[in-house]
Length: 83
Image (cartoon, rainbow, N blue to C red; front, side, top):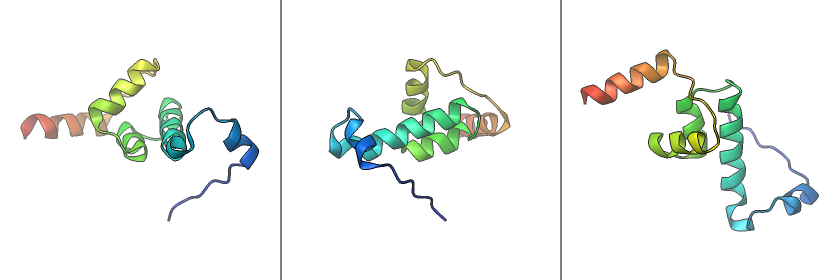
């Protein structure tokens, strides 16, 4: 199940992003906002943003969004370290 969000044309026109980058920009903004509010995990946020771990982590750092480091992130890091 996916979700579609309707954004009025007047709002779309007001967003200061080239049209060809609009969907990507909105998706990244949504993923960062959801993560910063603790509504989704780091892994799900970067999946939504279509970014790698390093790239999404860097984006959060640039925005001053602190990492929420929980059990899921610990397990991911341990799995990575063992491989």
